[in-house]
Length: 284
Image (tube, rainbow, N blue to C red; front, side):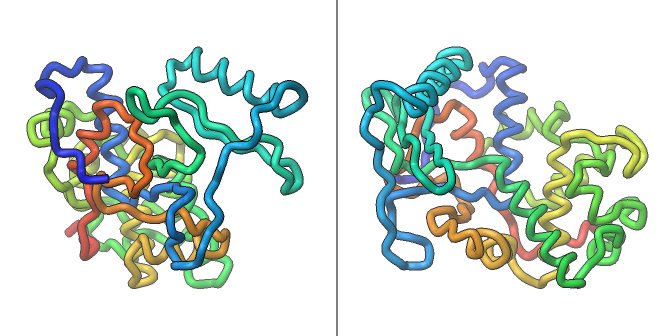
């Protein structure tokens, strides 16, 4: 699938509430944005059996699962749902509901961005480093990111647990205006974190919890510094490889590998703005 570079309307007409959702989606691409995929050549080059839909069930647990998915799709106004349910390794049902794009049915073998699931990948990578004694959860991030404001008070545990108190830059009007004005701008982690640290903290580090994209940018930058390894390579080594997630891979651009799931809203167009930047910033 070629990069999506066209617009269907003036971006400034996007309602405020939708604009906030758009920038929330876009922000995660400032990290590494894996794509979950089935049916294409595996990332490690080994052959892989395509994911195909199971026979449509008429009754039993499989039919119950599909009813739940169909109801959720309708209630949440989803364009499509791709699902697979297993019990003790035994397939119950594999199915796809809805359309990938207008007139094109969704299919289990389509690639799709898995969004903030990537956050759990980073947390897992951190814990594996802790298990090996490479770092401790209570080590201050200033050890690896010396230029970070209050970095001596923020430990590795905090961005992983979303307890730094850093403001979510995605919610900032100046960030939203910048994204709408220049949707293809490539933001660096340094720029994004500076937006957050330029504002008063929501609370003292470690005293509360809040969802802030700044946490994930910080954690990714710290992991790269700790290991001297690019984040996508690190996650492949520590998480995706051991779990045999051969069809999940990093994407530095808005491209989704063929065959791609195209049931995306305007957020897909905005998301092009935020590809990772290397080398890792020092926040100085």
